[in-house]
Length: 93
Image 1 (tube, one colour):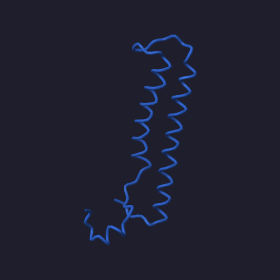
Image 2 (cartoon, helix red, strand yellow):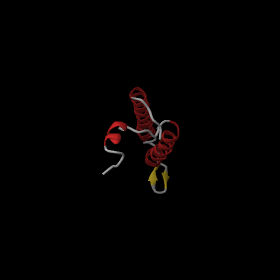
Image 3 (tube, one colour):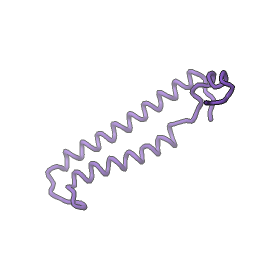
Image 4 (tube, helix red, strand yellow):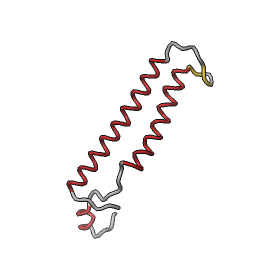
């Protein structure tokens, strides 16, 4: 677990927030974009229209893959409240 000062914590939290919102935007554009782009095509995949399959299943796959990327590349494990933990004597009740 990393020990960061207040400024570093703020910078890290902002980095994580921005990366998460970028992932949300990518998934939303994928989901809505393919739903509208493939709406008129009469192709079925596993009994579902192509637009539904690509839009919904694709958004799910991108979401799961994106979370793994965020966890590996962006998110950092650090202590958020170091002073309060020291005041309690290190015991969490």
